[in-house]
Length: 193
Image: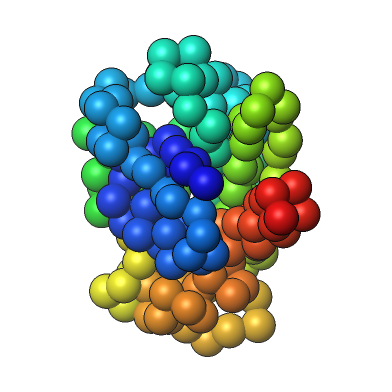
């Protein structure tokens, strides 16, 4: 079965592809000739994921899933949230985003945060939503060189490593995207056997 993952982020595509069973042929936006930047103009992470799948359905006609992920920091009233990718500006610089978060938290005692992933699936005219949440804290400085985005400054609860210090398998086992992906995979297995 062919399924489009609506992302241009190669790191994210690789991470997700590693989780999917081999009988699913995962296509990227580039694979289907979509080079547009899909607008993410919604107020919530869930709504942004829906915007992406609806865009692919409308313009390309493929069964598709899309995710949107946000880092929600308690001391910042849930920011950066839906603006996580462009928190420090439209250049979408992970380094600048992390620096901005660390600066805003420099005098904060409560560094609790969570990653939230929403995956919208549009398949055969039906839509479903899958959510994954990983609770943790924001470190005082980046650690590790793996992962992407805010991974170097996010340490999940119960661990002494940042996401960037973990292997892809470790991160997928406990992380927000892995949790949401397992729900998606279970749904696909039950509905396409």
